[in-house]
Image (cartoon, rainbow, N blue to C red; front, side, top):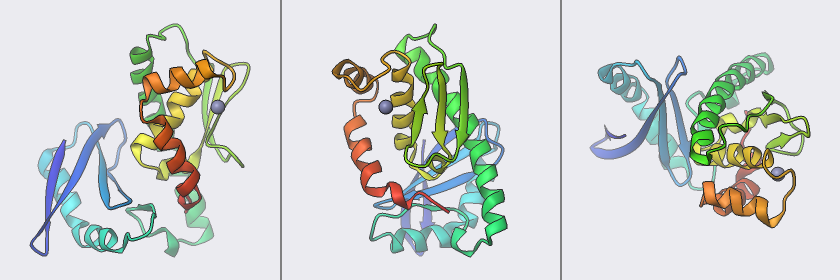
Length: 199
Ligand SMILES: [Zn+2]
């Protein structure tokens, strides 16, 4: 769903999606795309009010976004170490339920109804965005909470496809691209901008 925001007489478009999360999240992604994720049951007027309450901030951030940078609605550079820790915990929890929803969606899409990860976890991963172990446990880097939705989807699809092919063979990549045709672009995006995904 596309909504509009009027700031200083300028119309700004933002993309709204709904999830089981409890709070509204606003992500601004280069080159200035705005993604709002809201609880399913939110009233339209409440959603509009929340986004409009952040209008000045959104406008400022969109203007500032000359170089690739991901900024969450909260100004994380002002957070203390303890606040960062709490924030990371909250983001990880929200991310886990977001991932579970997306996995359900992609399982149907993939007709992989019988293929399920044994366990899904969100944690600090040193040098990867996701991993899939031989006993079918899938882990995701909590920093994906700060990534654009299509990038998160790419990592989810990548790990799900490892449940079919436990390698990076041609068959594996073919399956990934069948499910997520923009996989290559997402992979490049992560390589270029991944380091920005942090509090
Ligand atoms: Zn892989």
